[in-house]
Image 1: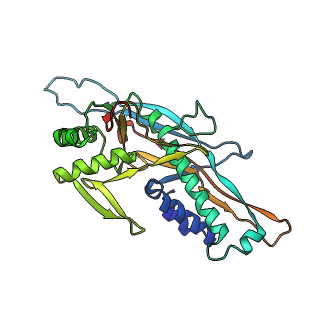
Image 2 (image 1 turned 45 degrees about the horizontal axis):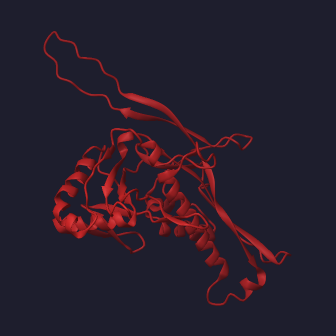
Image 3 (image 1 turned 90 degrees about the vertical axis):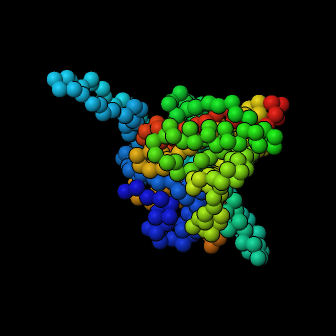
Amino acid sequence: MPVTLEQAKVGMADKIDQFVVDEFRRSSFLLDQLTFDDAVSPGTGGSTLTYGYTRLKTPSTGQFRNINEEYEANQADRENKFVNLKIFGGSFQIDRVIQDTSGQINEMNFQLQQKVKGASNLFHNTVINGDSGADAKSFDGLSKAVNGTSTDLETDINISDNTSMENNKQAFIDEIDGFLSELDGRPTMLMGNNKLITKIKSAARRVGYFTQAEDAFGRTIDMYDGIPLVDLGYFYDGSNSVPIIGVDNGSTDLYAVNLGLDGFHGVSPQGNGVIKTYLPDFDRPGAVKNGDVEMVAAVALKATRKAGRLSGIQIAGVDA
């Protein structure tokens, strides 16, 4: 049965697990909106975490015909795909004295929240840049899934400064609308880095396409013509922070996804196995206690026209 994180939380009896699920939702608009097909049942050895599906590449078409004339046959083009669920998250350690003296800021809650943010950050980066060929622990992301498809488009529009924005704002809006028209259905969200999202909002305000809405947690969501704009932020690998959707010679990419089981969606184990929390037990012997937050998930793109990428958008000088 497909579930969102909000629906998965309802089936969790543990209040801490519910708290962690809400933290994942708060930390990621994408995770909050994503539907998970909880259809993967590990084998008896616990080693099978594979989700198989059929991806539609080219849909079938209809035709007119004359009397005594046959239709010209054509078939929908599809391919068999599979994705392996991956395990990610992290652990933390707390000395029992630190927890006992943490005072107003509960140390365990603080570490739990920060670990959730770290896992969400890793998920965002993998959704875009994941490549199981380069890292076997990772699942494949959108950059790999849309590469070379009919919705992998390129532009050379320049909106790098105020003058170019003013001169090219209508052309930029036309580029975005042309890109969206290639997708199958209205996208659920548009994803980019902070600079690009700011540029899109600026252009949208100039032509009356900028709108806002409120999410489940009361936060304001900026929108392009009713489509949420999602800044995927920076990926922190433990030592450096880099934009998840990078800037190359001043240009960057815009991603669009249509969420749903017939489009772009998450995959998780059967039951409520997408997120697990293991808390420190301070009632047992030992000075230092361990805690873990863990997700078991991947993403799948069922139809190539349910997601796309518009690359080559010039948002900064070439040397930036």
